[in-house]
Image (cartoon, rainbow, N blue to C red; front, side):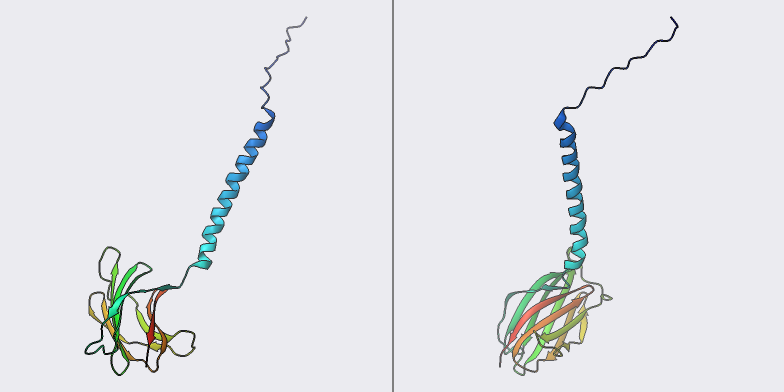
Length: 171
């Protein structure tokens, strides 16, 4: 006989019949969940709101310069906390005061682009820009004549998002 020996390697134990299938199912579930999560992140781009509500938290009682009363409001617009009030005088002039702060309470910088306006809900061409002025860090005031009674909205326009306060103006 020659010195040649056949090598015999031990056979690998066979996996139980359901183990391979179970591994495929787990991989499929994990892959499916990963794709769903990625899809949700992509969909967020299309569902991000560019308008958010501001909430009335109390009335402004009628008084001098606010004969028709008004509302105190607050809300969060993007990264800014918005606190303010809108009051209507006897001639239907809207007087608005807005304070913008960060979530940590720091006032908004003077260079922050801000727009204030009134518009009538559902009516094109009713937007009334409200020129405003900075009276203290993060604090702005503005006034404008409201031309008619109706369902108006105060718009606090900040980069990328606008805060909306619904305001009913009566005759």
